[in-house]
Image 1 (cartoon, rainbow, N blue to C red):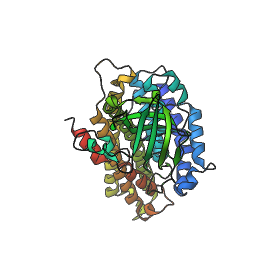
Image 2 (cartoon, rainbow, N blue to C red):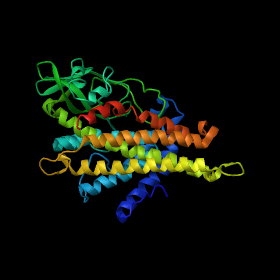
Image 3 (cartoon, rainbow, N blue to C red):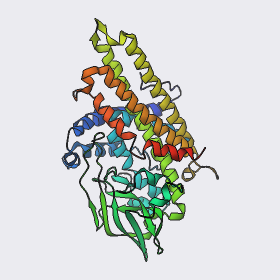
Image 4 (cartoon, rainbow, N blue to C red):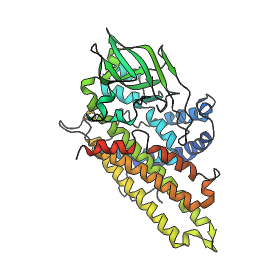
Length: 407
């Protein structure tokens, strides 16, 4: 099976965890994702929506993707488990996989602070969001190079201004904040004014039930419709200064680590999405009869399927290598002094996996023929979900420019 790949050294525990998540992806995520895909954005976030059931049932499994915790695994084992788990989630439904991952962002940032009070307040079982995108700043906020990133900081849409022992936040984040309409907490990447104007950025964790926080309507989208995204507004939102986990002088370092984590996660997710399209195409090619025989017996179809398979395996291998290296070299995960992740590999994985998912899903639609255009078959949804991935979490071309600075 494609899901098995060529892993020959998985431990019994790793296989057990992978199979548990695969069952969750098959039985819970995939049916929910298909149901949510045909609903309006308002219906998706309604309390009666199956979206909430997905989050509750995932939380009940007790698996943590980004926020860590006490465990008996080495960093290398955690990296491999993370790839296995996230690939299965992406196989189930890419939009829901991103919602599950984004939910842990505030807890991940709280753990970076090593402040027990913040760790206790921002727990992994809360639904969080990564609030970075702004109306006037999209992928450019992910690039801190002088010719791209710095000018955008002069006109931020969201500013946290220091007032005594607090920061007071005003402004907004754009409609593309994943989990924005449903999140209970946020890891807010914002401009910071410590008294001399907004001269840098920082990362602050906050409760989105705080006075002064409001939400816009969830956005209607082409793909990943199971992932709620929407604006967040801040009007004189007061947050304790201790919640500013990453100060401006450390922001570029924090952003680099964020990119390593988020891009690695996206890489694994869209290996799973691509694998789902490949497996559906193989199954359909064995069933669909044209010219008196199943179409998998036609050379053109077999060649197309092999190219799809080759791309999936290449994306998977790159993702696992990049995640392993960056996990072992994460300074916040006990790496030796002087160690640091390689963001160019994380970005290469994200770009490769998302491009692969789009190409493989497109080829799957071609194999399905006219049926591939119908909502009665799942491959057209996979194509729409994959197309969104090449823009979200940093557009692929902007990320590539940032990675190329490391050469």
